[in-house]
Length: 67
Image (cartoon, rainbow, N blue to C red; front, side, top):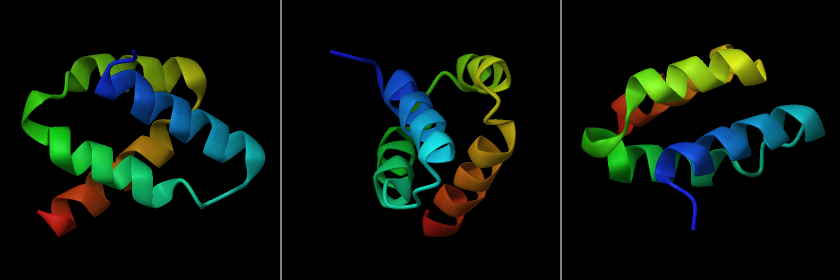
């Protein structure tokens, strides 16, 4: 079982690689549901490693707008 952070990162990474926006809803849902529990420094560090910093920032904005 993966952590919410890892689930988000994997979806961001594969969404970017595949060019598919279909997983966007799932990412935002996980992010929004787990927002107060997420290890944000971990997310940001690994987003940089995976090359998905921009996608994570967009996800944060969307999740904040939903909340």
